[in-house]
Length: 315
Image (cartoon, rainbow, N blue to C red; front, side, top):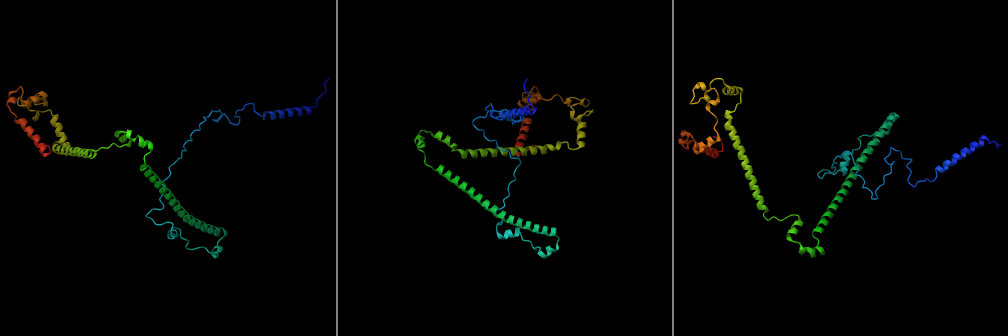
């Protein structure tokens, strides 16, 4: 029969095995890849994505809001804000100060509050003076930097414009045609530019004058035709009665019919066709009266149009 093992020995052996397992698990990992045990599955880095060798450009930082335009604290026509006179007027000293006798009669908290307020006022005056002086120094420094950069760019531009040609340009210059040189300069010479501009200006003025004359003619025609416009209710009622009357209308009378037959506008006959109007103008109508009436009516209409053109309005 095998010997009996005590319970304490068994517990000690179990604890030793657990410690051994813990030590071995915390040792060297089996895989050479980076462990992802500390990154949860909700993280975008939980799945490793290979990155390119070339680094990506950093994204542009988005700044919310709009900064206001800074004020010009030192205008050219303004006063010198760093002069002793301006600083004394902007930060005047207190007219009266509390001496120790007055503060002694006040409670402790009230006296401390008065002293604190005087100290804060002195700090504000000092900060305003120092701030104005520092801002002026910063503005002068910025102006010098801007002027220096402008002078450098201007000098560099002048140097590049007036520099001598390089050897390759000097040797290959004879092989370049004049048209190619003008194309490379960017502006093609135009000797007739001034004359063409004057011609265009005259054309624009002529068009504007024609438009103005057309507007004036339209306004005069509107004035001449305004006498027949319906502007009141009485005129509208008269026009309706004249157009939709049930009695014979004097305007519908025809020489070939009696007054009882003038019941509609069709009593005057059908409207003239284009062929009939051309026949009247060319005296080729099929009616003897129209053929022998002569050119008096057509001439009168033409004279009226000529008079309208000469006078500049409808007649």
